[in-house]
Length: 330
Image (cartoon, rainbow, N blue to C red; front, side):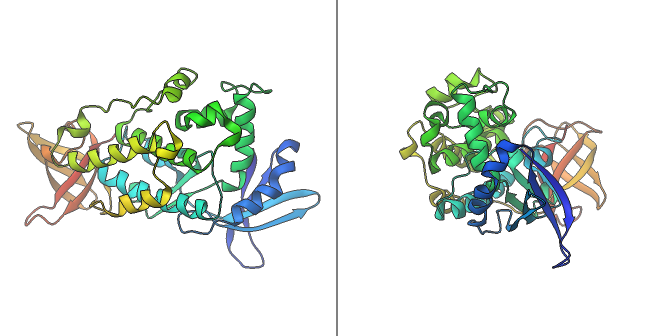
């Protein structure tokens, strides 16, 4: 819907993101969307800095986030993330969405590609983006659902949003409120924790979303006692977010409170290669910071093999540092 440029603001001397609509249809709604975006002010939301018209073209000036979208940052190299990291991600996302809901702004197009991550898996920053075009995206989705010029299978906006869309966004797309954003958070949480879309992709997902029958969690989610208590709490929250009845879902503020009550590690993440794995029980990871000991009980998901790359956090072990958690990378 828009072109995005890196630009230098000569008045302030800072580097910014400069956005301009791609077509006439987007131009009609661009100013209104910019005004909506400017209402939201929170560290977990990309900040709208200015709006201007120059030579009959509209421009939105936003905070520049030098990172990757959440899909590229967290799902390109790993099939899923561990519960500690998931709790951190969605704690921050819930705060950003709550800030928007406080000022009456519904995103309506929450998905991993609309969330920016800085600092790789260590997540030094995490921000929801594109509140400025969320209204335009919503209108395109409505048109696709109602059989406009583009359908659910041809609209790129609708295709990307569909796996995370609430039932009411499909059944009654013109009367979607804040609970739709909550559903999207729950669907993303399930996806990042398990590596699976909760209801699938494409048109096959539509009847499953509308029925809102809760998806089955893979066995590895609860098989390791190191991670199962937190994983169960997160799946419980995700399931509540994906309730069929919008009024039964928690509010964004309630989500923030729930995540605030969880205990999880926020240690930085490193990448390394499994150097040895003795008796399929314990071994060492080779990394830039040296050798790190790990045990199979510290692994979330499939056990890595010698030579495979892993993601881990390390702690003082009274000898070699010890890794927890360890997640195999693709």
